Each structure stands twice: as structure tokens, then as C-alpha cells.
Image (cartoon, rainbow, N blue to C red; front, side, top):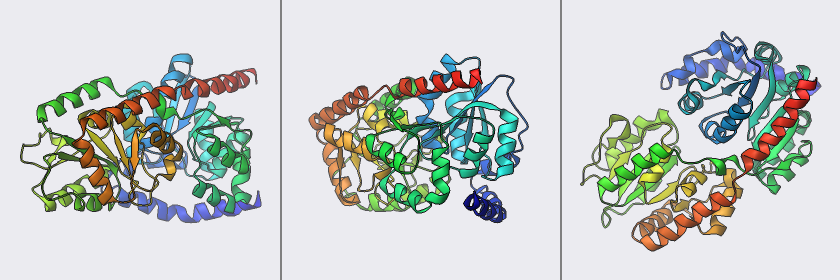
Length: 420
């Protein structure tokens, strides 16, 4: 308790600077300047139905939660679904993915007062927190309000595990207060158990249950067919990666169209300028433009359209893996039957990476130059592409079922909450 007291003092001392940072980020992403009172536990809307609450910090978690949210809506239709986010892009993704079928709000800052106001306002029957979002005061308030919280689709890299262990005097009570932990793999479950989580269960990865949007996939295939040349997708790139990957491309010798999709929307214009220095200003998806036959680059500056981009490409290079960020989701590409090229840093997706490499659905390389060499080689090798793509689809089919295993735990805790 004493450590949480000092943690709370530190959070409160930092709040003025956090709010200033929000306002600063709002210059490029106006969503950060909207509904700011919600971050302090002040909400101007609610639900007339009992609420199931799910927290998805940003874009990746919001997308990963889709199979579970749909299943909860189908089975527990008498409940409203509240999804909280931390980032503006995550909140926009929730709106695009679920429309008006869910409530969406900011997660409050982790102070006792804000978290209690959040819980007193919405009175959730059950909470689900995606992947690795552990907030000591929030979980303490959930215990106070008798709200069981399940860590869904839990993952814990070796590096993150070491970090939590260094602060175990603060984080161990938080992990111990979880109602259940649904871990993606045995290694994740072991790390959660070492941190004090109660009997983690290996339920698999929800991302294997995500089916590509059929309309987007059909549009992507049509777009690719109209081009009449190979498409190399550089997907979900982080700052600095576009430069190293584009610099690794040969000046000539390929007619492949290179489609670049940055991970964060606030960087779209920055990446457009970067590509423009390589050649002419690129055509942009958001403007409805189509690449001319002579153009080398195309900017994928739209949100929620990864199914389109994966259907439109021949090979996908996954960003976040060439700088030490831990990678981005490769399962979407595998599900679309696209050969995957990965950089060296994939610790956030360690289990999915291992499975994809073992299945022959992906190739992992040591640097950007090797990635471009391998990717362009695949563009010129239809037989190998077909083999890798088929392996990716088979991998995803073989590892489905995490949604049902999550849903069973939700049933148990909702039944228990109803009895209380």
C-alpha cells in the first residue's frame, strides 16, 4: 500500500505535464484535445444496460479485440460494451471497427479518484484489459467496486517481464488482483505467474481469429489486378524505418510498386515528404489517387484498411522490426496468404514469429538491406510466394479458437457477478 501511495503522488505530480503533452500532440492529432475531462473520470454519457468494459490501449489492441467483442455482443446482448482507449488513433479505430454498436471513452488517468469515478459511473459487471495494460490504482479500485478483471490475450516479453520484476513491490499486488489471465503462450503464462498473476491459462492469440474484411480484400485484389505489376508492401513502419528501407532499394532493376503504410497517422505527411525526396511526390490512398505506371511509390495513408493493403500486395515487409520496437502484427499478413519478411526485432510478437518461421510462412532477416533483397526476390518467384502464402493461411486456421476460450472465462465471471 505504501508503494502505491508514492506511485500516486508521482502520477499526480506528472499530470500537468501530461496534459500539456496531450495539448501538444493535439496539434497533429486533434482527437487528443477532445473529451479531456474523461481522462479525469468525468463522463457525460452512460448506458441503460449493464456494461462489459474492455480496455484497448491503441490501434493494435482495438483490432485484436474484434473477435472477442463480436462474440460478447452475440452472447450477452443484454449488456452494453464499453471500450476505453489511451491513444487518439486507437479511439478512431474503435469507431471505424464497431461503429455505434459500442460505447467508447478515454481510460482515466491512474489516480484513485479518477478510477473510482469511472467505475462509479459505468458500474461494469466485468472488465477485460487487452495484452499488458497493468495500472495499480485502476485494479485496486476494481477490487473495491467488486469488478472482476481479466487480462485478455496476455503477452509478456522477456524484457517487459524483467521490468515488471524490478518494480514488483508495486506491480505484484496489481497482477495478483486480476480475476484471470488469458496468456497467448506457455512462455507468457510462466512470466505472468512469476509476476504474481493467479493461475494464468494459455488460451492462444485472438489475432488468429480475425478474418480479413471481405469487402476490403476484394477491393485490394481488384486494385492489384489493375496495376499489372508486383506490389511490395512495407507495412506499419515506425519513425526512422522508412528511410533505412527505402535506402536499401536498388535504383533500378525492378518494376515493383512499393506501398508504404506508416504505423501512426500523424506521420503520414512526414513520410510523404520523405518519399518525395526519393522521387516525385507519391500518390496517396486518402486522396483516391492511383499510381501511374512510372511511379515507384504509393503512400497508404488511411486507417483501418490493412485488409485492403495485404490483399493488394505480393510480399509484405513488417515494420517496427528494423528499429528496436518489438515488431508489429504479422498474423494479418499470414491470414491474407501473403509471404512475410521480418526484421530482427520481433519480441512483442515472439510466439507468432516463431510459429510463422517454423511453418515457412515468414523469413526473418538481420537488416533492411537483406529485407529488400529477400522481398524483391520473392516478388520475382511466384512459386515460392504461393508456398509461403499457403503456409500462412494454414497456420492461422490451425491456431484459431482463442475467442471461445476467452468467452468461457467471461461466462464464468459474469455468472459469479450475477450471483453476488
